[in-house]
Length: 66
Image (tube, rainbow, N blue to C red; front, side, top):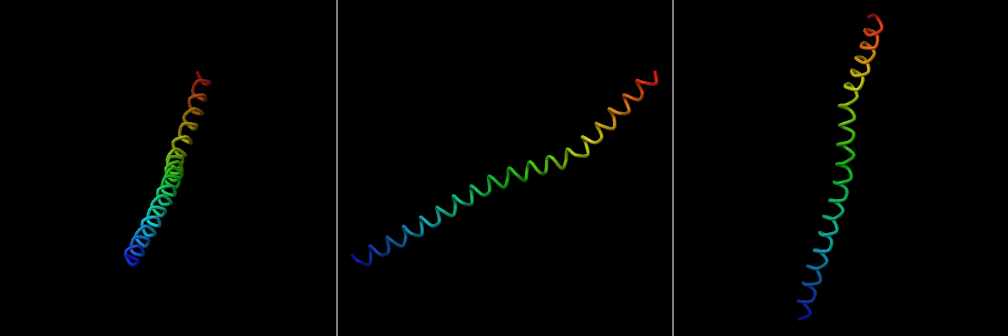
């Protein structure tokens, strides 16, 4: 009976440790994933925003010439 209690206690401890690890992993993944997506989108937008500014400047210059 004493051996059975020890085995159950070990199984419960392993289960709690594994559950804690999964929870920590999920939290870290969700936070890091959001940051990486935001960073990637901003990197992709930077050249486009620069191009838009250039085009707006060119349009203003062309409108001024007419």
